[in-house]
Length: 203
Image (cartoon, rainbow, N blue to C red):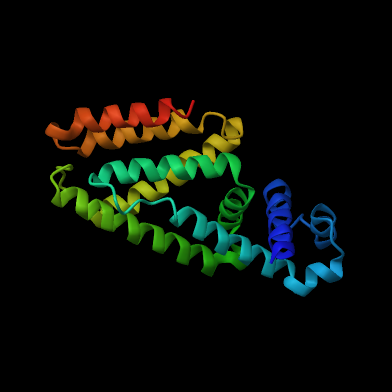
C-alpha cells in the first residue's frame, strides 16, 4: 500500500505538471523511484492511474465539509477554505481537478464528482435557508448549481494567472459577493466577518 501511494502521488505530480496526454508511464515510474513493472502491478494503465487520482481527490475534497457546524454557511465557507488549502498543497487534489477539466476518458468520473458535489452543497444550502441565514428567491438547487461552478472558475483562473498565489483573496471575494447577495440582513455582518477572518488567517 505504501508503494501504491508513492506511485499515486508521482502520477499526480506528473499529471498536474504536464496533463494526461503528455505524462508518460516511464516518467511516472521515474518520479516514484520504481520500475515500470512495479508500477503496472498496481496500475495496469495510465488511465487507471488517472482515475485513481480522481477518486482519491474526491475523497480528500469531500472530507473537508463539516457536518457539525451549527451555521450552515460557516460550514460552506470553511469547506471552501479547506479545499483552497488542498489546492495549494496537495498534488493529488491539484491533479484530480486538472484531469476533471480535461474530460475525454474522464467524462463519466468527472460528471459523477460534480453531481455529488452539487448535491452535497444543495443540502447545506437547504439548511442555510431553513435556519434563516439566507433570504433569497433562488432555490437551494439553483444556489448549489451556481456556487460550485463559481468556485471552480475562481480557482481555475487563479491557477492560470498566479499559480494559485491569489487563491485565498479570490475565494474570499467570491463569498463576499454571495453573502452580500443572499444572506438575511440579520446574519450578513456576521457572515462577512467570518469570511474576512477565515481568509485573513490564510494569507
